Structure formats: structure tokens, C-alpha cells
Image 1 (cartoon, rainbow, N blue to C red):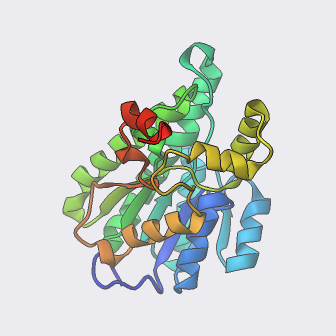
Image 2: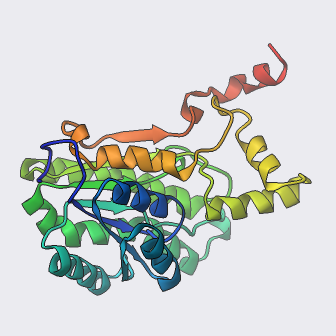
Image 3: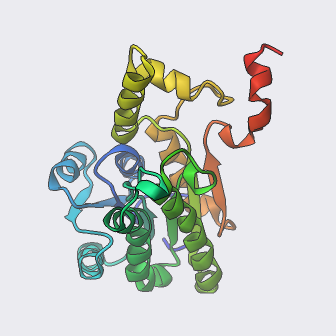
Length: 271
């Protein structure tokens, strides 16, 4: 099945970077459950093997930001399956400091992890995606729309992913390739768990659960997302069900982005 025809993902070949844990692993599970051929890409073999064991995904150890490594990963996918229908650019991380506290190495690492991974894998996948009239789903973040405290590199990288999404959609829509981005808010992943543990320690909270409750207290849905909820949105964008959507930025944040910051005090005052 190619491109925008039909809603099923069964039989499609889906490549997920950062596929070994968290959101990436949940995306792999969702696609595999519907009969897709799933390939998980990452630098650490152990998490990839676990996803292979649990959902049957094919693991490929590769650095998505490195041209030769990304090219070899795509070549392996094409050798094994003969096609590539969906690329989910999910790899990310790094960049958790303010501008003044970010050295050159930290800046380069944040952009490499959050932006170059998506750019390089998209570029190397484009010939196969054009042939398949496929889709790219780029996992940005709420940090791609707003700025949190002391996360300069991460914020800049995630903002840039939205520009990459729009540029790809503009240039390759004529070839039948659709490209969309998703911006999750808080999601219960191993990376977020670590952040909650650190936050709980600094804020004098008793548990990780209390930390999650605190950081989502002003979110309309009052909770973080489960990775499977983000995977559902990605699956929609990487299927024929979204056949006339490209260049879009889908926010999946429990409603955080609709909250007017200056009026939060009214809620806290019980008004």
C-alpha cells in the first residue's frame, strides 16, 4: 500500500529513531500491533533488543545524526523489506541548561541530538519515501512552542524541528510525501521520570507521582500523558487516515498550550 490510500498500516514499513525506550518504544508497539513491519533505530543495542523481544520490531543500531550510519540504516531497511513507508523522527535529548551555562560542546550535542538526527534521517530516507509516497512524523515537544527554564539547547532544537517539518512539507508534498510534527507535553517516560525524581528532591516532595501532579496542576487535564497516547497521534499522522494533512503541528499536551499564564493566579485563588 502506498502513500495516502487507505487507512490501514498493516504491511507498511515504519522506521522509528530513538525507538528503544519511552515514546519511541510505544510507537513501535502501536504500529506492530496493527501488523506493520517496524524497525527501531538507536545507538544502544540493549533497549532495541528489548523492543524486538516484546513487539517483534527489527533492531538497527545506528547514530541517526551521522550520515554514513543513517545511510546504512536505510539501506538495511530497504534490503530487508524492499521499501520504506513511514519515518518517525523521535530521537532527542540533551540541552538542559541556560544559554550562559551552555558551552560549545553542550550546544553542539543538543542540536545534534534534537535536530540533526531528524534532518539526517529524513534526507537519507527521502528517495525511498518519495517512491512509496510515504510520511514523516517528527516528534518535537511543547518546548518547540514555548521555553522552559534552563533548557536552551533543547528548546532551540525542538523549535527548529518545526521549521524542518514545514520545509520538508513544502518541498516534498509535490512528490506525495507528507510531513507533520507532534508536540507532546509531559509524558511518563524514563527521561521524564528522572526529571520528576530530581524535581521532587529539590522541591521537597515525597514521590515521583507527587512531582508529576505538581507539574501538571495547571494543565487542563491535570495529568501527564501515557506514551501510548502520543503513539496514537503518531500512528494517525503516519497513516492514510491523515491523507490531506501535511506541514501541520499537532499539540498533544493535555491542554497546556491554551492556558493563559497571567490568569493562573485566579485559579490558585479559587476564583
